[in-house]
Image 1 (cartoon, rainbow, N blue to C red):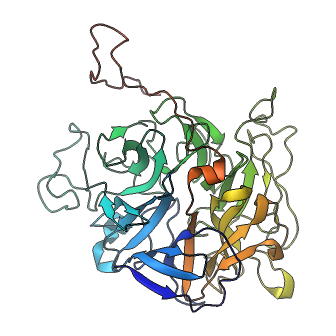
Image 2: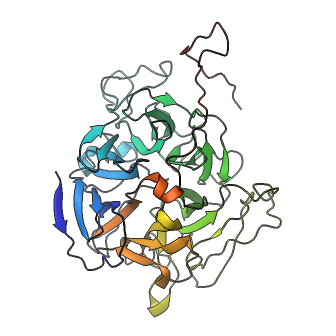
Image 3: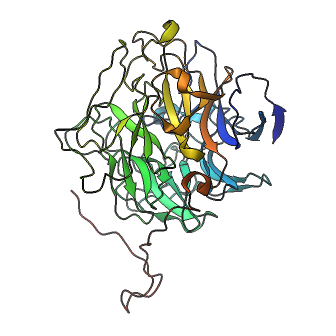
Length: 472
């Protein structure tokens, strides 16, 4: 159902020249917490999150009502005509399996909506593709656990859709039924690519044994994503940002997972090609932290990263809870990386106190916008779920703009778009073609791996291929 109404909230303050898609999530006041998807529980959120279209005149429409479920992960098509999104049909407490990390029995699927006609097209249908040799699977009801066949105990989760050049969509899914080899997330989500109509699904990243989240296209054709593949003797909670070609080749680090206890997640690319990422502490910050900016490629003639010891790497500035600056470095720090919001921090404690004895809050969900601007979600208050030293007031997130993606040293530099205290506004997306932000119609189209028939006479076009490898 589509509902059109005038905004009754005066916090719609800033003039802007394009419509904005966002997700309107529930809020329960200053004294009750809310659940946001983040690396610890990427498939958990409160029911009732709606997909919204905010117009330049201040009116807005409910494009998709969350009802008993919720919408998340919106992304605009390259031509600006469609919005891809993920929809959980039922997130009520009774619809969650408390024995499986409160994952929903009904799962989640990917859709797209035409922003002119309002036509909705479903793209995934709870497809289940586990390793046939790993169990006697209950294909008819994978969310069940009560038969003699193996079930997951929750539904299939298809999340994080984004467009890829050539009429394709990248997304993540647990359809292969993997379990993470270490804790601090559930379940294992892996990267797939499908056609824009949902056909020809290709599994592109067998390297996703831990998990992957939020593939995001880059101007040069790569896909960057948040990765839980950190190996070796390091903190098991860390996530990094990697990139990969859409066919699954040429994976490499963008920001490596070396910030203890922290996750690099929720990333975007701005008009000039720089990348903006969120650094936050897993679980206790609901995905809120500090923003950091880095070039997509190192300056000419320089290595992409500093050394493991961090020699020569400039400090990444932050203001810790006690109120003073405390720069830090990370091993293999990307060259050119710096803090975009140094007046706050990404750590597992309340945000620092600012002017008027009010805590300065934290950030999430950056999104590139025209003119090198940056749409962000900012919440006031501690933005931490532990008494370090307080959790109150709980998250009151709204939509803001950072003009020119400048370094923000105080809250007065944020441009308010919308913040209704009755809701949490999340996931802002400028409703414009890719070209209006990045200057090109779509990212570069990289060559695709599947055989075109020219490699060998015995391998005609379309010959099935397998992945051969060895354990590490």
